[in-house]
Length: 493
Image (tube, rainbow, N blue to C red; front, top):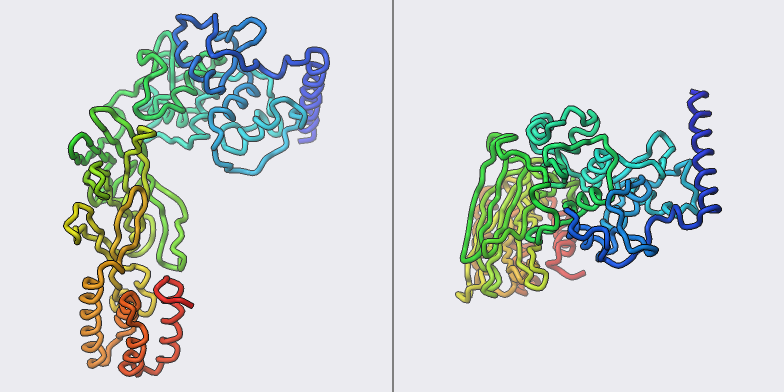
């Protein structure tokens, strides 16, 4: 242990001296290439020209001012790769606390990039507290970094994926196999000139790293920047069989595919095609939460597994542009929970689809066009009342009506007093019957009072409630109900 620490200390000292010396004797040497024009004289007709010029235009990679070159065959150091990652993924989330690398002084040109590459999960130390910034990075480490930072994992067997995709799969280090299988499934792997030769241990060139990055940041429907004949293709018959549900309307087609496991689904993915062009293809991540011991009903994470209830393509907001509506239920969220609607909307200015997730809790909905104006409503119930005053079986829920409006869900219940009144009458009649049988009625009366607040009849309804409910816990019940109606937005303080 002592010997190991001394060895690391020596390495750190030597690395630091190398960095200091190079900064003093050759200023600018370690600063990496400077940003130059996006057109480089040494990439004309190069197989990766389009990708290199696009990344240079976005200032993700850079060339050399002194001679206007890119030097596509030059090798990439770990520090240079960290700098590219920082520029390629500026919005990457911080996943872990920073660490101090013994060979990276705070005035080193790549200090911030290396720190962020570590914090965002893209890169780790080379050995303990050593980063080795000037060491050239092999191809397998580039792919592992991208899979790690983007949190990709393979959907099928890593062994099957790699053996079917690469002729030299056996050369991939064991610790990298899962990450590289995921990268292959995501079409991040580019092999030139032989697409089935990964050459994982060979040091990566600037052109190769550029193409990996192009694939990693590519948007659905974007014009290909990397020649398709060099993008590694995972054979379609690899991995477990997938089930696909399809819905379409006009020029929009939606597909949700998944791997069936009994009644549930894993690796749920959605694809949206518009005018024959795929504009969205991504995993469907369902929040996981439980209503049990979770009064705030906050999600604890997201998983690409659950159960698909329905998939529809229809205009939800009357703008003649159909939305994609996918209803799913989380299977990892505890008792009687949770239903979600994923609504995907086309953004013409961006030429892409964005989406929202609407949480229904333990209730569902039905679509009704109350106004007969081709702008449908979501008729549902307020799931926050479930088990708030009694057990689940004896709970009742007040009416809720929602509308989808250009990317948001709006509660429009108050606009439909006839619907509220009808629901309120049903609850009142049920409460009278239950009370006459000396059974539990607090859950019914709570839902009734919520409706009455929406109708503006709260004062009269409280007077009526105080007359009909004579339970021994009436004081506690009334106090709790008032607080609950305030906390849920039905009543004012």
